[in-house]
Image (tube, rainbow, N blue to C red; front, side, top):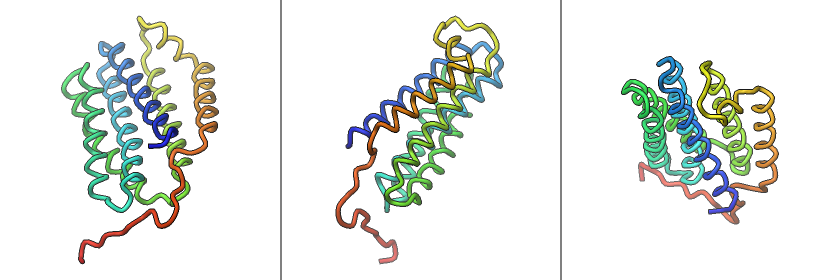
Length: 187
C-alpha cells in the first residue's frame, strides 16, 4: 500500500468520525436532520471505500462490490446507532447504495486517473459533511462543531484539504506491464 493511499484511508476515517460526532452531538435534534446526516455519511462512505475497492480489485467486480457494500453498510449503521433504529436503517441502506455505485465507479475509471477521482470524491464528501453541520440550528455543546459552522472556516478547511491532497504525488503508483488480468466467466 502506498503512502498516499494510507493517507487517504486515514483522512476518510477521520471524515466519518466527524460524521459520528455530529450525530452524537445533535441526536436530540430533529429526527429528519439526524437521518439525513446518517444517510449522507453512509452514502459518502460507500462511495469512497467502494471506489477504492473497485480500483484495488479491478477486474473482479463481484468481490469489490460485496466488500464495498459491507463497508458502506457497516459505516452507515455505525453512524445511525446513536439515534433511533430508523436512522440506523437509513444509514445502512445509503451505505449499500453508495457501495454499489462506488465499486462501479472504481471499476470503470480509466487507468491513470484514479488520484483525481479519489480527490474529487473526498472533497465532495467533506463539503457534504460541512453542509450537514450547518443543518443543525441549536447551539452545540462542542466548541469544535460551533467553529465548523462558520462558512468562512468551512471554506478554509476545504481549501486546506484540497491543497494538502495536491501535495500528495499519487495514491496509486503506476504499475509496469499489464496491471489488469481479465478473467472470463464463460471460460
